[in-house]
Amino acid sequence: MPALVLLGAQWGDEGKGKATDLLGGSVDYVVRYQGGNNAGHTVVVGDQKYALHLLPSGILSPGCTPVIGNGVVVDPSVLLSELSGLNERGVDTSKLLISGNAHIITPYNVTVDKVTERFLGKRKIGTTGRGIGPTYADKINRVGIRVQDLYDESILTQKVEAALDVKNQILTKLYNRRAISVAQVVEELLGYADKLAPYVADTVLVLNQALEDDKVVLFEGGQGTLLDIDHGTYPFVTSSNPTAGGACTGAGVGPTKISRVIGILKAYTTRVGAGPFPTELFDADGEALRRIGGERGVTTGRDRRCGWFDAVIARYATRVNGLTDFFLTKLDVLTGWEQIPVCVAYEIDGKRVEELPYSQSDFHHAKPIYETLPGWSEDITKAKTFADLPKNAQAYVKALEDMSGAPISAIGVGPGRDETIEINSFI
Image 1 (cartoon, rainbow, N blue to C red):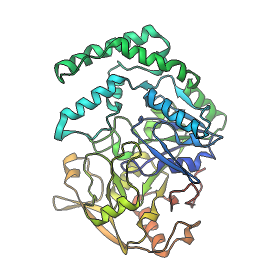
Image 2 (cartoon, one colour; image 1 turned 90 degrees about the vertical axis):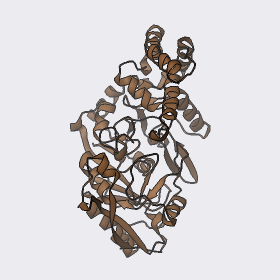
Image 3 (tube, rainbow, N blue to C red; image 1 turned 30 degrees about the vertical axis):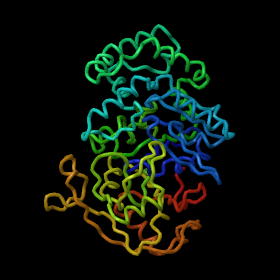
Image 4 (tube, rainbow, N blue to C red; image 1 turned 45 degrees about the vertical axis):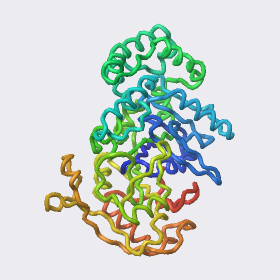
């Protein structure tokens, strides 16, 4: 049976939660393989709306085992709060597995994140201030705290001391902040150990055995392709790899096990935080997309920047991820526009460019070249098949498919779990 990767093909917030949840009833495991509680998903089940920040979306599917892989950074307080909130709403969270090798977001990581971003002023990156970047930096610098360290007080204390040796110097001498107590940090982290213990596992072994037993495993990326630390619009990116390759390192599964890679695309484009955005709209159309699409970050609460669909970005996502399929979301938001522009290329220094420029400077100065497609006014939220869509909506989908380089196999026509047109099965 297949191992599938499902990821964002733009700047995140494309509707991955809905897509993952849609597949959740058909898969045995749903795995978060990178990021932390800076990546939110909204899932609508019946008349219930769930905002998930750190937990895999599969936690809402009774037959599915949700997994937090080794590539994720975990804030224990956020995780336990999220579990408690779901339990209060009658959701069974007992099957959750957490990798013992996942790194812990410590209180000092959050402090460093916030003071550093403020210090940058106009040069700020637009982080969520939740300690994600500093935790990944500690991981790479080999001073990180892992989940398994919570179960050896001696090792935990030594690691916290090593991390704070340098950080306290920076906090006190550079940022004029109070030093952080090693003992207080250790005490707080140890307080999470018993609560997390039932979930901690060797998830690499579990997932590989599941695939050997013909189970279906879905790897769920946070953020999006253009926020990838290596392949995104650096430095305005996240601190991990949401692209398909990140699923292998972030979950411990070899690339030969991956059979399908599904990219999630909005029918338009959004972005949260700072950084270049060629099709961004600053007019009534941009405000209408924000209002109709409910474009506010699930985790950050920030309004999303909105713009027309960018086919250059979609082609880039197809290439760097090896996408086999697209899931197009929020097509219903475009209902009512007489004409819908689509960015097909950029103008850079007077030249037409059809592929994403590798130069940050070039991308920053890119101007969108649009083709205009006819819109539609009919309500599409009740459509069950592609043929149910208005002709102009069908033409819009086909045009995006041709421009993006991979087949569109499913279309979201509303926020509900059942408001999806499935053209080709993912499994």
